Length: 271
Image (cartoon, rainbow, N blue to C red; front, side, top):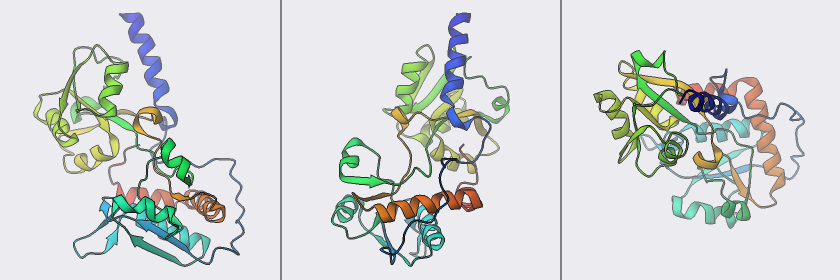
């Protein structure tokens, strides 16, 4: 048992990936060249998005289009110094609208799947969505992910995070709930010792339940299970726009603007 726990501790340490020692997203290639691409063929960037993906892109109580993605699109255009338009589409039509070149870029969380990769090009990833553990606040400080035997872990039923637990922690007791909120409330009520799931969704619940619970341990980046993260989709071959967006993302990270947006929209950071 001790040997198994030792091996498990090593694996869990590796799974945290680039999250060790950092609390802010940092997906910028350190060797990226800070050279403005040729913009002679780029008079403006026409962004497409949806209005049903809070906190990334949605309409507020006044009907205004807001969100992390909306602010990011505008910052990109300002950095590149070109006019910016943002047009909303229903989710089921947005990808086809991009394929028909009714816009230059889609910033709406389109998954980086093999199927979408055949239809579109993608920018660099600007935000990954890791998995994280949540415990009662008083248990977070001494949390040890390699010592979970005998603990009950709550998770959303049918999620990739449930698969993660069954695959890598087969000896823990897993209790599945219909959604993330119910799974988190199981920790709050004492029905479960630990929650594991989507860190971004958990961060919003924690923002309203700081007296109860806290993130415990590091963030887990598993692209094969949790997805590659968020990137901006573009029509295939639309290289001038893609290069301009990637250049802007590097500049926004180096200037601190990308961190400022992250902290504004995610007050309980999930990295």
